[in-house]
Length: 196
Ligand SMILES: C[S@@+](CC[C@H](N)C(=O)[O-])C[C@H]1O[C@@H](n2cnc3c(N)ncnc32)[C@H](O)[C@@H]1O
Image 1 (cartoon, helix red, strand yellow):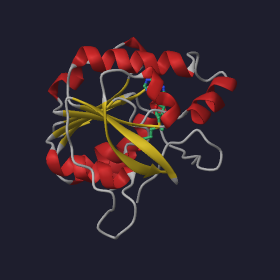
Image 2 (cartoon, helix red, strand yellow):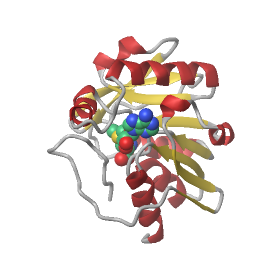
Image 3 (cartoon, rainbow, N blue to C red):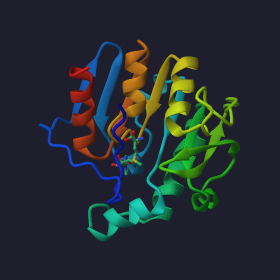
């Protein structure tokens, strides 16, 4: 069962957990890291990187509460810079209004994320994304995570939230490198793995 880390009130899940900054298990590692400080060297071992950055509304919710200091554009442009310098196969799921902040990508499909059609943009990667999933519904972000886990062996997510992608990778005996700026996310992922 997926639990998604959303800043939006209607999707927000308040989870109480003991806080840890990092953990490793088997060939997997999760740690706190701010992508604004650069792509962490741990991501070198990944054969694909996939992330779902906050959408503008989610970002603005935390910005207004003073929980994050950088503007939406600043963050997107930094992510774009890091991806273009890092040169790994990378996939992001973003809203249409974020596209202007990215460069040198291809749009490889559309998936549904929280009921919204979202753009799947990619660098150095030509994954074929079906329009519908096996149940006949529109392909969603979790279907896309399953596809990625099936195809790749070591999967990175630098904005892992509550860790749906790393958890899926772990469940299929794949490796992951996961990071998030928020300690709580790393702690929730740790608990989800321990309580499987
Ligand atoms: C939409 S959520 C990702 C949800 C995730 N895919 C999941 O399965 O729960 C975006 C995440 O980006 C993280 N984030 C925001 N700014 C960040 C930064 N500068 N560096 C790293 N992570 C950041 C947030 O803490 C949040 O967990």
